[in-house]
Length: 263
Ligand code: PEP
Image (cartoon, rainbow, N blue to C red; front, side, top):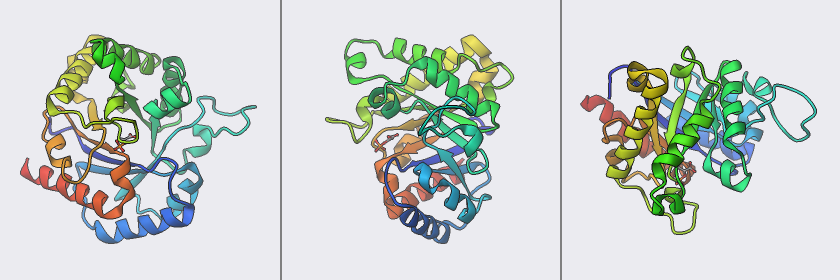
């Protein structure tokens, strides 16, 4: 990892926790995690219903909030939707193209590209999730899937703005909530992150490819986090299930701090 790249530890709470439960969790986290190194960023992505209250409670010098999803339009007749324009006072980051959005809600690469653009337009850092399905992997289509998701997700991102984007490599078959999920092995992750940097290099140049942050997500827990953080080219973790338990999330944060101290 180059010294310029931060370590990101992101908790995706998905559709869990009431605002009260989310507040209690944050209280516990802020109590337990006292010092966070400057080159580390902890990001919580709660359900949209908790964002406003957590934004008032959170110590923004230590933790940041992310939206799990949003509509790509800034305003208008989109019943039931929330725009980044409405969210931007509460969050600093925005997850775009999570596989559950792609496959359960049929979001297309085009829409995801528009969401990435909307996040940047509104001053938020997009966290673009990409990753192949089990079938694509079996059919040796991992590289083409990664390329097309990157091309779609970054379609509107200029050379000037690419440094604002974080990429999360999350192979769909490794996400714990999926049937038959299994954690990815370090070799697969290294290969994917190399592919991602190669593609970024082709579009935006070698220096940008070196600078962009790439995270891994998929069945990470407190016992495996350290191994994943040791993979060259991996700058952090996006954590679903294991982030729902404060003890295990705090243990992952401590592991990440240890890795930073080893540098
Ligand atoms: C996710 O859904 O982004 C994720 C990484 O989930 P889990 O850690 O539960 O596999």
